[in-house]
Image 1 (cartoon, rainbow, N blue to C red):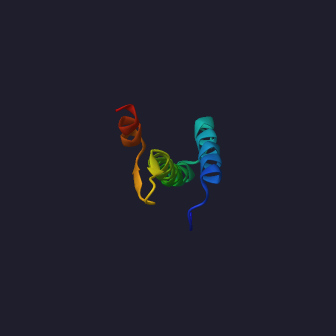
Image 2: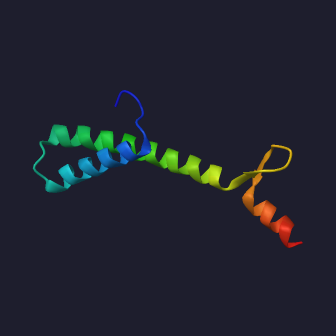
Length: 78
């Protein structure tokens, strides 16, 4: 994988790799290469999901600064 692809493409490629490996008729060398590529794609997807989660849990306050979303909820309950 020369460069990172978007999340949807990476996930689709990962699903294709898993499907091939589950069939069991892949030569060992190719299976190892596919497995390594799958690990890279899995890590990329995880990184993207963690970044999205981090973004979703923050809000921008009146001063244009990011702050945790939960903190804002706690302030509103007081």
